[in-house]
Image (cartoon, rainbow, N blue to C red):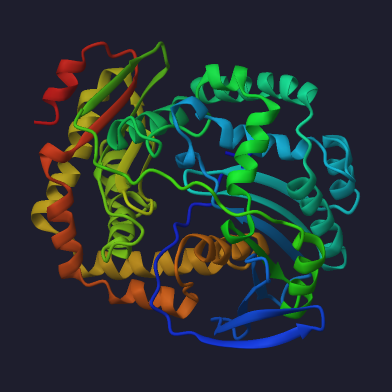
Length: 463
C-alpha cells in the first residue's frame, strides 16, 4: 500500500536450502562484517553482509544498467498490529515522508529526488514495509542520504499527522469506490478471518483519526531496528561500496525488536460474503485456502494458479471469457504468507450473469480437482513463470525486491538457478494431488460486490 499509489510487486518469497559459504573479513579498519556470497544466474554475485549492529546489507550488482535502487525492507507489516492499532503500520509509512533532520518536509524529500530524475516510493504489506529510491548510479549517495534521514530522524510533526489523516481517509475511500480492490480485501478477511493477517492494511477509521505522535514513535522503536531491517542495493554498484554506504548512512540505526506477530490459527468458516452496492458490474472473488510460502507445495500452487487463470492462454480466460463472453477481466492468483495462503479467481461480470459466472469458475476448480492438468499445461506454465521472473529482474528495483524480501523474511536466500530448479522439480503428479486437495467444493469461499441481495442463493451455487 504505497503512499503514492504504488502496489507491492507480485512475486512471493520463499524458504531455501541453498548451500552457503560464509567468511569473516575486514571491509574497512572501522568495522568487521560477515560476508555471504552466492552465484547469480546472470554471472554476477549477490552478497550479504551484516554490520556490527545486526543490520543486513544485500547487494545485487547489475553491470547492464546505469541505475541503482536502494530499498529498505523492515519486518513491520500490518499483521504486527493488534485491534487498537489497526492501520498504524500504513499510516507510519506515510509519516516517514514528512520530514527528518536534513530534509524537513515532503517537499524537501521530493525536490531532492526529483532534482536528479529519480524515483521514490514506499509500500506496506501484511508481513513487511518497504521504502526505496531509484537513481542514476552517480546519485547513490543521495538515495542513501534521503532514506536514512527519513528512517533514522523522522520527527512525525503533529500538524502533519493531522493533515495526513485526511489523505489516508481519502485513500481508503478510493479503494472502497473501486470494487476490484475492495473485493480482494473482503476475500482475504473472509478466508483468513478476523485476524491481523485477514485485516486490510488501511486499518480502521477510528484508529486513523486518533493515532498520535507518541504512538508512531513507540511503533517505530519496537520494529524499525537493525535486526529487523535489510538494506538492499541493486544495480551498478559493488558490494564493498554498498556496505560502506550502509555503514555511513544507516549505521546509526539502533534498538532491539520488541514485538512479533500472532501466529495464524485457522481459516474462517464462513463461505460467502455479499456487499450489496449499486455498481455497474458485479465483482466476484471465488477461491480456497492454500499453502504458505514455506510449504513444499508453494511452487506447485503458483503453477496451478497460472494454469487456471494466470495468463491469456489459461483455462479461466479461454473457457469463461473467450468461450462464454462472461467477463472482460478474469484472473487467478496465489497468495502466500509465512503460515497461510490462498488461491482465488476474480472477475467482473454483468449483474444478470453473476450466477452463471460463479458456476463456471466453480466448475473449472472441480474439473481441475477431478481430472487434473495436462503435461502440456505444466510445461507451458513453467516456461511462463520463469520468463516473467527473468524479465522482471532486468529492473534494479524488482531485483532489490526479489532478493531483499527473501533476506528479510526467510532463513536463506535463493538465487535464480535455485528458484528455477524448484519450478522445474514440480511434477504433474504433485500438481494433481494439490488440486485434488485444495479444490473441494466444501472449501470454496465467495465474495461478491454488486446489486445482488440474496446471500442464500449465492451459497447454493457452491453446493
